[in-house]
Length: 302
Image (tube, rainbow, N blue to C red):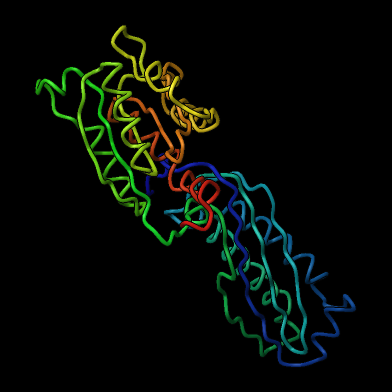
């Protein structure tokens, strides 16, 4: 199966349909009056659909087992057609489109099986996804002007050339996938003054997003939060909490990160871990949904 461990848990909803076409109005009447020899057709098919949703991962090899939070099955009878609508909801890392279509298919097949003793002209048509929502794509904003970002790597070792930067470059690659334009990338030592200089500089330039990586740990040289916080106009604790929660689900050490998020004038400032994994997971946790803040902050400008 595809690796989905990097994805965030969100509400996922999908609605699928199937259409069963009958050959005579007498069959439709028998269904409505509960006169089909095999029993209550609509209720039996609905029950089969509920089982189908739960067992999708057993039938489709690449589907992930997942908690199903809701399944709704509706019928719309129009002359000789029965439209089946199946809506499935979950709070998980991947969508429920296949679950909804699988259920719609099984409901249709159950109708076929129960009606075949009295109806010889049954067709199953238009099994398809009607709509879906959930996941990162639903929280991706489009902007008239590209979001401008600067990446600051805070590390004595890297600034001295003793080690290559990977975390900063990883952040840049991930931001590109979110259509963020990285206009500056610089490596500086773990010094309070240099950290603050970069924040003041980019606030004056109206850089939309300033991301520091490194200096958020617990060693005596980890000074990034102490340098940044006094300059912020506002802190946004929920951003750092979301990043830590995402990391904590993957490693118990994430709770030790002192990530910071806040606003300086018109610039969103983030201080993320310096490890490659910590930086990458922080970006995965926050983007692209975090970019919605620029629609809130700057409105018509973007």
